[in-house]
Image (cartoon, rainbow, N blue to C red; front, top):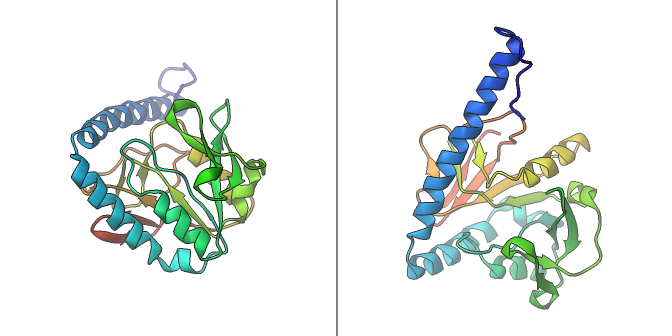
Length: 216
């Protein structure tokens, strides 16, 4: 990604340079955001988790969805398993990702806390039958991890591109689920997040302060 044609002064070379610059800017921003998360005290993390779960459960997009693609927060990611259990308790079919060797995502149904197992990169993944990467296209809403989002709805992830691939698959199938990112306080940025062609904007962000909506 971000490689030009090598021809001096060509449009492709200029675009390639722009993509390389955006990727470098993203890496620098990720480092700063991860450092800020690492400095959060445990009490703040617990408070944020409860508030994010509470606001997320009030989203109309989740209330009306029969299936939701979500994830299991790990480390200092906001949210918690309570959100998954509450959705499942409502009768929602909760789909959780399984990271594939090429960083694409397979999916499986969440069947409760006992259905999760430790996986690579510190992840918790569902142990049920794999449904295939296309399973996400059946979701009425997609909950996304992220490090930040700007006022345009441009999400900054961790750089693997896994969720952007999944969202591209959803678009190709003609589906239009609500895309929602869960964040900490201070991660809704006034400055623009560097964007690349593969980035898919979100419709809303949930922070401890409430729900923030965008025109994605």
